[in-house]
Image (cartoon, protein in one colour):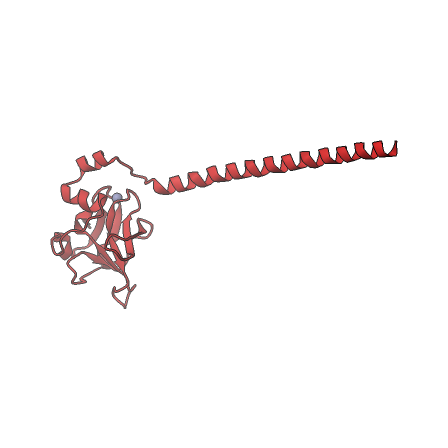
Length: 178
Ligand SMILES: [Zn+2]
């Protein structure tokens, strides 16, 4: 008799134990599935730009050179851009989406043949790594449309930021102060 009761009790304990295990498993599964969908959403949002167009649309809107630089991360021929020698007061905007990216007061002659700035308009330019040339350097692009602008190096003017933002003139549009 005693033995029978003991066994029943043991079965009950086993039952509760198993239920707890199932509940725990369910909680873990739910937690992870919620978590992974949240993470997915976050990375997706990061990839999307405020101004987002299809490749065909960009090709239609931009000139061949603009498309090559902005959408294919190409580099214009040095000394080819008239903006290289542009020193009037104003702002340099993204040629694709018109976001102001650099100010004339931060432009300097780097002698490289590409428009150079010691700083960007903060928040309007985004950075990412680019290994096109086989070595790592800091690629920069328009934060609004994702258009490739150029690269940033650490050999800029020492008396200011020390940075040299080496930008393709074809990716820029100069808007003078009236
Ligand atoms: Zn842009």
